[in-house]
Amino acid sequence: MYYFKKYHKTLSIILIITILSLMNLSSFDTDRIKLIPHFDKIVHFLMYFTLSFVFMFEYYIHHHKTIKTISKILVLPLFYGALMEFMQYLLTSYRGADWKDMIANTMGIVIAYFAVRLLRNNTFVKKWMLFPLKQPLFKA
Image (cartoon, rainbow, N blue to C red; front, top):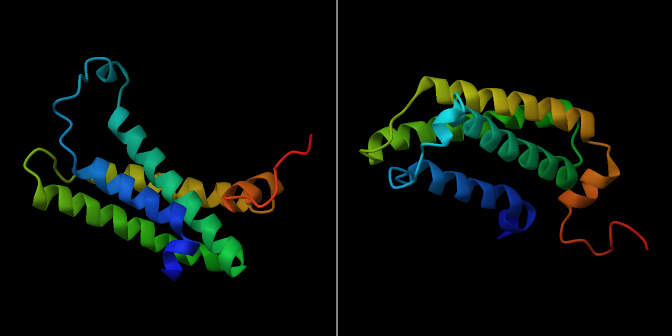
């Protein structure tokens, strides 16, 4: 329960990524998506950017660690991405493991690290990460 209270956003994102990664998407109309080259890789980048950004910020806020210490936890989203690729290969017949997906995942994680470095002292982002707020963000 401790981890769920401290990392509820990160755990929610992990659940969403797991469902999306193992879901059969063949029933969706993908004709419009095919117009965007490498749309799948863009989605992988965004999922792992979001996961890493939220995870690092929650860790930073709850443990008050330095950015160098935070960079060490980036191995966890990377490991999770590899695990999801392996599970797609192992558990589904309609999805497969792809090393290009892992590259997109890794790029999302690395860019999230630099975004957290840049925004870690931003008061708006800190307040947003501490949701639910005990006070309003903006005073009227």
